Image 1 (cartoon, rainbow, N blue to C red):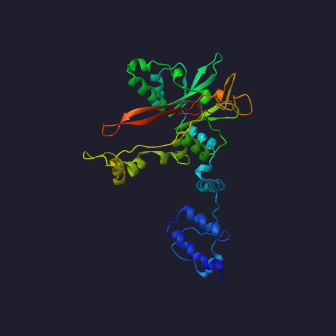
Image 2 (image 1 turned 135 degrees about the horizontal axis):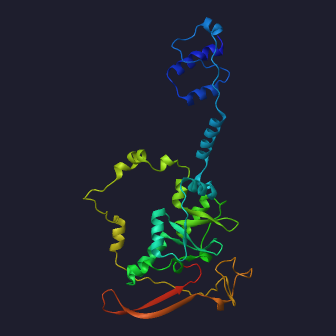
Image 3 (image 1 turned 90 degrees about the vertical axis):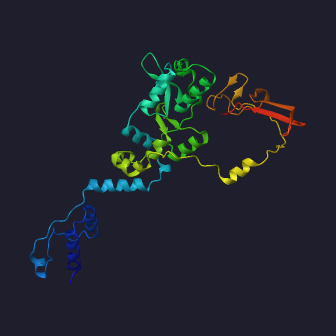
Length: 340
């Protein structure tokens, strides 16, 4: 008995159970020399195999092979190795929102633009005579919250705050942190984590801002539209998690933390050293905001060019019981380089 006669009944049984097209292709790829017969309710006899016509083979379309290979390749790739340009392209193809706002726009207009566009940040631009948009800074939704909190704390009326211009509160272009399209998601995540920022502009070598990348954009990369939302996913993943009961309360701090908080506060004794360091990008003629704007190749070493300031003061303060005075040292250091 030949190998063909042995495997043919197995193929007939598989086809009678209505296997999927994917299974058919797997079988065809495993035994390309075999002929897959059409659906039949009876097994062929020895005589039938010599006289009955054979069905043609089922070729796998080339485009289907390429699609499957692309999906498998996407699964094998680690997200941290994906280039930022790919994430940005996927973001813009899914939904395009122009992340810009005019320098003369008000805080109110910036808030509305962030909410309606679902933006975490926007590039602040000014329009030139030729209609070209020149980037002059960056603002984020967190910056807008800081503006409101600071102004309201100072007692300014809300209407006056909303009429302020964004050009007065943006991060100037000389201080904006950016990434490159050819850099990876892993590098971009590292920068954002170190600086505590939620979005970062993508700057091309030609000096154009191609877009803004957020942590959500990177986590959504590789997901289909149906995986990002829709009624089916809502019913399956979210519907059972909506709403808290009326008896919901906050948990107490862990026992080890409660014990630490209950300890009596004891004074901290420490040795303090004071050092005055020069600004690395400062010269007698001026100061640069970054190494690119700094003229000389070597960093500044003259302490007279320092922007650091400090103070040390010794005062008498009452102890915990308020009975005796004891010496206490107050100190402070103001660092003008990279402080946040």
